[in-house]
Image 1: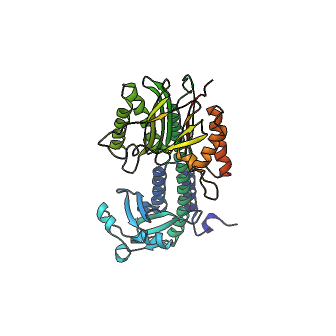
Image 2: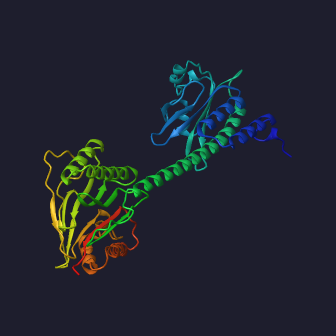
Image 3: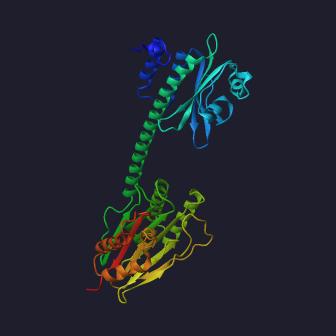
Length: 422
């Protein structure tokens, strides 16, 4: 029966030391605490004056000195110095006289004031065969590192690589959970800005629908009764995720505030545009339709910054008149002259139909987009139904056309229908 002293040339004391390290590394650690435990164990087991762990940054193919006795966050390219050569070749390097070895880089010594005499450098390889980093011990007490030390270092490195992979995986899971919670919070904030219920406007039927492609989206809409009339908004920010969601939520809030302070349509639109131009990144903007409906005159005055087409379904002919945007997207640039609002007259049965790109540009598996003509066909066939039913019909048509293709963009619909004459 083998005793511990005959296993891989390790003494019983060596085996006990490795088992102690294994037990220590099994405890839950954050990354820096775990690395500090590894370096302390390496000094103890290998009787070294110094020890360090260099982590591999795959994005830059560099080694980063994360834990050492006196300096941190030194970066060296893979292939540079003894640690770089160890990482490149993925083999242990035992050097009895470092200053006599041409691969040795004395730069770290100069930074720390330490004098390296001998070193043992061991690659850290994960279960998947990928390079995790490099462990290095310096200056064995009373001599140089021998074959038994290399055996110990190899066993320690194997434990270190496993523990390091576990910590990184745990941190990735925790970061993913944190991101999920942040996205849920952002979604709750964004959804809270949408109308909780459709306003009641005599002679009109209203519907708004918002289906983000992810937990948060870059679209928004509004239907609200103000002193100036019925506010009708549809906005679409560039991109997806939290940043566009914050952009359209901010635009939404600024518009509400401007109108509540008594601004007219042109003033509110211009002020919001100037605020967004000053605060949004240069490559970001928001396409937005902003209109005010006078329910008594059945007239919509509107400005559209890049949001189109604007569909006016005319019940008398069963066709759509398509209007283009009236100007540039919000936040794109400051306009020296404010453009006057366009006007749309709604006859009995007519509808103002605002749809985001996620409807028109919903793609089938063959790459064909749903398009404007299919939208108009649905409106023509079902325009007599309530707007909530019509919105559902339109969404069903889009999904049927897509034949299971995933939703790649936010889908937002706003329908404002003047009821037919009794």
